Amino acid sequence: MDQANKNRTQPTDTLNLGQTMAEAMQRNQLTERYAKLKKTVLADADIQHFLADHQSQLNKDVIERDFANLYEFYSQKKLATQGGDPVHRGYDPVLALIDQRITVLYQPSKATLQAQKMKEQANLVATIHMPNLVKRAELDDFSMDDTDRIKAYTAVIDFISAYLADPKQFHKGVYIHGPYGVGKTHLMGALANELALEQVPVTLVHFPSLAVDMRSSIGDKSVNIQDKITAIKAVPILVLDDLGAESLTPWIRDDILGVILEFRMQNDLPVFFTSNFSMEQLEKEHLPNTKDGYEPMKAERIMQRIRYLSTEVGMYGENKRL
Image (cartoon, rainbow, N blue to C red; front, top):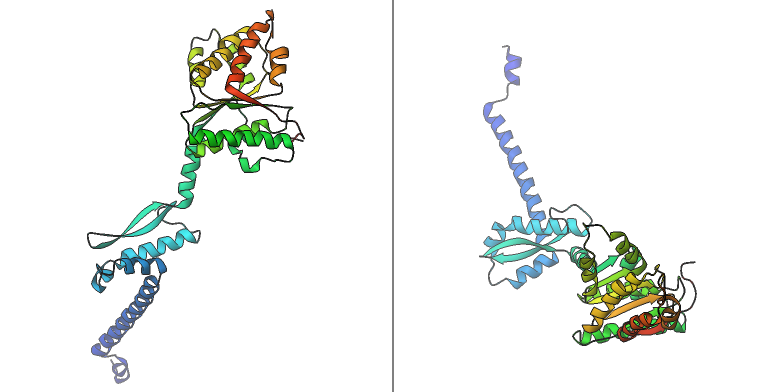
């Protein structure tokens, strides 16, 4: 090797010094970044409140030891509130001091609790052959733009108040009659959803569809008609929708409708009805007429039960479906 190349050779101690300086600078940078991160995390309002609440149990060593958990709380909270992708989606981080260690726990978020509540509420509203709109119906959405609608709404509100105040006492339901499209079914759906908020189960049944279902089950050994009737007649709150629109037979009138109403009358269980017929029309024009002829006495027997179980309210006005 010539003299020029020898002069270009870097001494080993110089190389080591350069590497040491580079590592030191890297450590300093990491230390500075850590210090900046630590300052940001400890400045968080929720963390500040936690540290203040437990100041008698915490010191700098504990905070330093458990800083990773404080950072987890800070970062997961930030992701959750800013629409990110937290580790536990639907759950909010909560700080806790357990055995002198700062720990992160996770509890359901407000949105998760609301979703759970809505699911529980939906489970309390049973629908049989009913349109999906009843599950979305709310009392706040019910239009009160005429006297009849106000009366119907008031009757429902009065029932809810009285029932919740004393659920063991018998309270009459409401028999709402009027033309198609005025909002009778919507009001019944809103009633059911309002009661479900108070943990009261409600079953809504589209009676004409139930009648068809019952008739088609005759002779089907896999279907127990009595079980179907029992499942309906014993629920806490029952809504029979569109009564009078069914194709009436003596069996449907006496052995299905009559049995349900008799059980509920004997056990003081409320029933709500919607119909295109007034009570008088239902008694005179619909219930007596079957293929067996005109049977006013049997119609009167059904109407005695309906009148015992409900108060009549007419609802006539603008067709809200148009």
